[in-house]
Length: 251
Image 1 (spheres, rainbow, N blue to C red):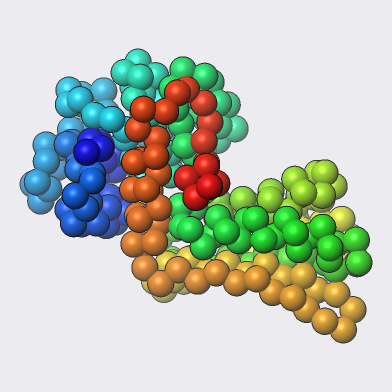
Image 2 (cartoon, rainbow, N blue to C red; image 1 turned 90 degrees about the vertical axis):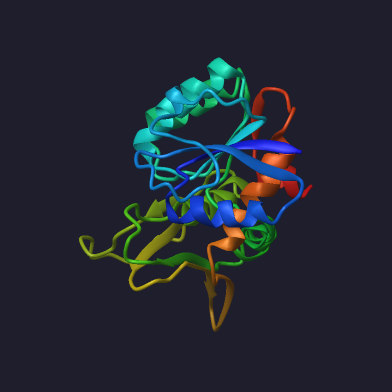
């Protein structure tokens, strides 16, 4: 049995994971952390991670960027593996994640779904073939109107996957409205759409002369992210210090 702390338990993802774990005999939530305790969870809830006194095997984090520093400090102090799913972290916070991983196991992923992580692999092969053939690359991501960060962490991860395969030769362009010039061949355009209740749509477009190849991923519910996070927590239990990602989980 894997015992986890749900960091951000009363958010949408926290509640989704709470429901999924309730039906999973291999894992249980032993405590939650949230600024507000609405009394709706079958486990104790603490206002801050520093207040948590419950022993666990890992923590699943779906909170906000402002809460991540305290979480990392707690995990390092308690030697508690962390599945870090919060996006929109600053450069300083990303550096702190790397430092924390020298002391404890940290699994960080911009997107926890199996489909997205398979797509990350496929894009490397596609870029290696299509980019030298003159195909331009554009990424369009769509999310619900409550998402505060843009572009999404997943869109950036998709761009990074391509760029790493191509030896970092691309520049990211987020807004073309202020520059009147032709598109550079060595750039990846990233566009964000916000509206309605879109869970998460990502299109990676390879546009060549007279043909277009598009890789698409559609998430129809937040459950796909929750299932991935749960598998990651099971995987991370007992792992030595270091940085991990979903590629380690799916093998």
